[in-house]
Length: 403
Image 1: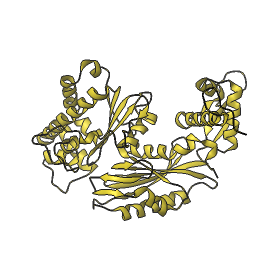
Image 2 (image 1 turned 60 degrees about the vertical axis):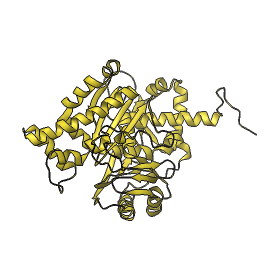
Image 3 (image 1 turned 90 degrees about the vertical axis):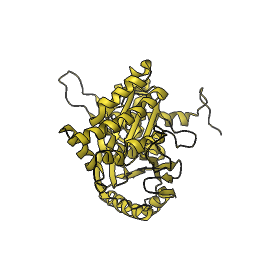
């Protein structure tokens, strides 16, 4: 016999699943909360919240215990908490020069992590997958007895095809149509797919959910590594574009006439003018000095008054300001967040970026856009990968095997 639809066209089962997912998502992102707080947040009565939490407790996804004593009369209210010691995901962050793996519990806390150096050696799919699979199996093996892995998420520095984790284009390492997600899932052999996302997209999600962008429904996240990527949140949702390849602000053309060559094959792209090599070249640093530490050295040298470092940050900051001015005029964000290497670059060139914004951004948008550095630091993309790993559980809490 078919199920009866509800007024909004959803079956009772669909409505229940959505409510369970909303409650679990609130606890996962917001931490411990009372039943009364959940009822107010969901807009339902307390008996409904009791029923929902009872199901999630039985499934091993949340637990209830008394709040800390407050000195007020009466019985302490029960607090609903994520079962972080029982439910986790494995998250991977694949940058140009490092590989990171972490076990992340429900609620978002990083429980354990492993890192390995990645040589800048071109198309290295086999090496990357082998190293990550080894790290992932270590994390899985050292999880608490009885704990369950409910998902696997990965952040990769390239353009990712939604659905299967294919790296369509990774210009900094020459990856083209590399079956990264499928290969990593096969090598891990945990019976779970590996969900893969673009690093800047996932960084934007992480900052929106857990970082400096919490409560900001329209933001732009700019991530610097060797190149520059972008993630844009519009109305609280990630802007993916028609094929999932949207927000490639690093390939916005800013210097069409005498621009530096870009790894994408063009010239004068934003990432070519503000990326790692542009800053180090402008500061006169030798070609073998690369990476985050080399960028920090330039910024620190500028702080100490080094004229070459100061001029390098002025030049790069001017191009960065042009790029930021363009995205503010296009998207009217409430916040622009600088992540990865761009945290350091912005720290040393904030005045030049703001000068460009003052001149080139429409006043009505300029007054609303706050400029901030990532609150999650180098872990922004890793945290985003973990959130990707929790996607299936939060969409269907009782349909995801736990234990």
